[in-house]
Image 1: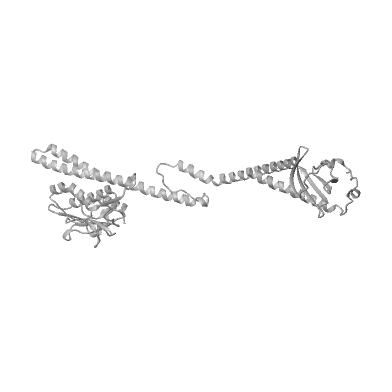
Image 2: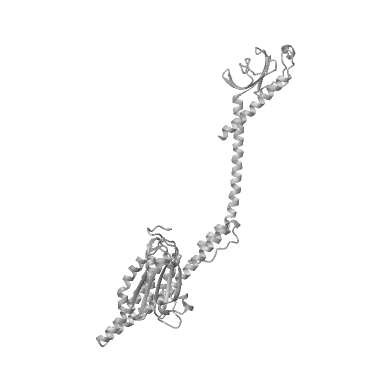
Amino acid sequence: MLFAYFTHNKTSTWDEKLQTIAIRILMTIPANNKLQTILGPGLKLRNPALAEHDKLVFQVWFDRSKLVARTPGAPEVALRPDFIEGVASTVIEGQRWRVYSVSDSTGHVDVQVGNLHSVVDAEMRHDALIGLVLATLLLLLVGGVMWFVVRNTLKPVVALGTAMRNRRSFDLTPLPSVPLPRELHPLVESFNHALKQLDEAVEGERRFIGNAAHELRTPLSALQAQAQIALRAPSVEEKDVALTKLLTVAQRSTRLSEQLLDLARLNSGANAPLHSPADLSSLVLHVVHEFEIYACQQQRSIFLDIHQCMIHCDIDEIGILLRNLVDNALRYTAKGGRVCISCGYQGTATLEQNNNVYLEVTDDGPGVPESEREAIFERFHRVAGTLTRGSGIGLSLVASIAQLHCATIETHAGLDGRGLAVRVVFPGATSVDGSIN
């Protein structure tokens, strides 16, 4: 396409040259009819070789029948037999000519200027070759300059990549941005932000592993001690007491292991949360059935005040949240104590309205001082002044799951002004058919 455009422009240039020459020749001819007498037989050049220097020829015709003047090498027949003014291509004696014809106002004198197509084509090929060579050289020059500039610009990036590969494992110090181009600073800042988050996550996992090891060491040591006591017990009664304590410690270890697995599942982030509409009251009933036997054995009572309410949630995660709240309330409630579980819409909302949904677990146990209620949702926190009452991992799981569901947690006094009440408030609600409002 580019060559065709160049050829068209070049041909137009030649046509304009032919037109200009023809008009100038016509304007130099005297305005009378005795052209042959005036022009004479024609002049000869001092150097005949100059006549062959240019293949451009012209003819002067009178009354379109008499050739009164022509250049050497020009055909004796009209370059354009139809004598129509303008540019045209003709074939004379097997040669293609590009011709421009023009006549005077009387129509008696015609001037035709022509050039061989082969000459025009050769000149166009020559000019195209020169243009191609120049364009190639220019592209090579530009490419070399760009390669040099890019190579020198990216040297700091290459050095930074080499330094990163040579770093020690878990070396998460921020990347330097001083030697890099200013355009790469936002990218380096993003990398540093990601490294900071990774460093915080790794440090958090280190603390978690340390705390978990500490928490597991105590029940494992107790298991070993109670087993030794049971083996050495002199009577069946003392053996039964030791075995009962051994079972209690084993149950505590099992619960701690389950919580660690639940926490690992939440922290892994391997699977995207699958949130779907669910009836919270049905989930409460399902979890309460799991704790009925345990509550009866521990001589605790579970009361329900639940109403049908819909939330958009991951059912498995809400099940973990419920189990940890109920387990925490039962463990820290004395024999004969009560645990109340309630859920529903806040205020006077109905199932058809879009309003917040609450889940509350309340007990009448020893409770938690108001100053420490926020801290109980931290991992392995224990209430000041006691070695037995602490949240371990359970309530930290509750806080993590609530955060994943954009829910808020409220704490206040429990039943009859004693114990602890934990309320989780979920945003929004759904209609009866389960579609989200």
